[in-house]
Length: 123
Image (cartoon, rainbow, N blue to C red):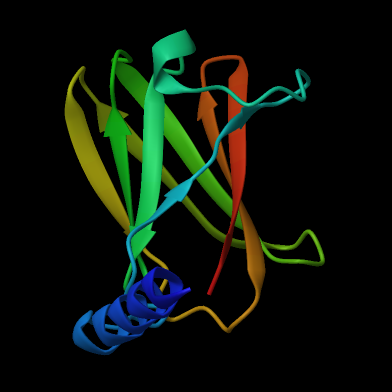
């Protein structure tokens, strides 16, 4: 019984010492799905890009793709709120600033040739 109390006290004290982050500041990975497949695609299984968001900036990394990527972001109503075209090479990255968008849930689409990957993120 005393061991349980000790560990509970230890965990509570660690929580006070650890920094806290709001969702806006935390680095969050955007899970990408291949459109039409319904399966989560991970870099190990051949997804040529990966993305994460931190403080309103989406960083997209090109793991194995070289060429043009069209980035489209749509709001909850399906309206396009941002669209850009990026030229990338293998092992490069680019950023997309979404800090001016209103709070809500968004879907980002990456078009690489005739293949589309998409993922959701919250602001």
